[in-house]
Amino acid sequence: MKVTKAEIVISAVCEKQYPNDQLPEIALAGRSNVGKSSFINTLINRKNLARTSSKPGKTQTLNFYLINNAFYFVDVPGYGYAKVSKKERQKWGKMMEEYFEKRHSLKAVLLITDIRHEPTVDDLQMYDFLKYYELPVLIIATKLDKVSKNKRSQHVKRTEKAFQVEAGDLVLPFSAETGEGKEEAWSMIRQYMEV
Ligand code: GTP
Ligand code: MG
Image (cartoon, rainbow, N blue to C red):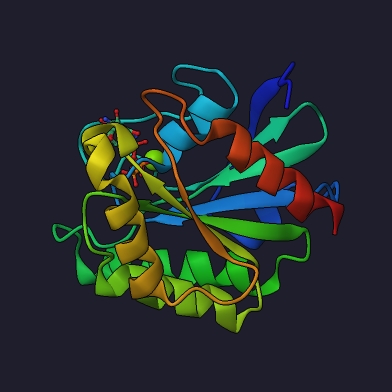
């Protein structure tokens, strides 16, 4: 996809702040610091439009990025960061549920995992949560640049096995560093938006 325009429209914390133009949305999900914001930047060829950090917990709100005036990437705060208070975790849960449960313009969720690691219990719960709402999910196994070429398929298989992906969902190896998997990701996103 040729991205000619990408801009942040709103950082929302509740439903009434979401854009109301009915354009399709593709949301991210995944552990804190796994590379959700970096994924968006790589896809739209921007270094830091979605703010990233080497420290977990950078993204705190639902950030709606309008792409080519045609659809939104919705960047979300990550889960699974130990140094978060119970109160903050509850706030996070409420914000995420409010979005994923009722958002009609949400077409698919890109669940980002680190290809180097076995998916966590939180990852598997997130997948089940999204499937409960019958959302199509593309699992992006990112940081592919960090594993040697001869170990790649082994790591992908481990991820597929852990998630027991439903028919229609798949695991896509990706790297925000090298851009590997970028065209495949775009091709999937295009398909989600056509439905
Ligand atoms: P939160 O907003 O805190 O939930 O994090 P996030 O999931 O948005 O992660 P972010 O994109 O901020 O990236 C976290 C760190 O991982 C940064 O230091 C990135 O540079 C690094 N990173 C992200 N993707 C890749 C990748 O594909 N390869 C490598 N080597 N590093 C990556
Ligand atoms: Mg982020």
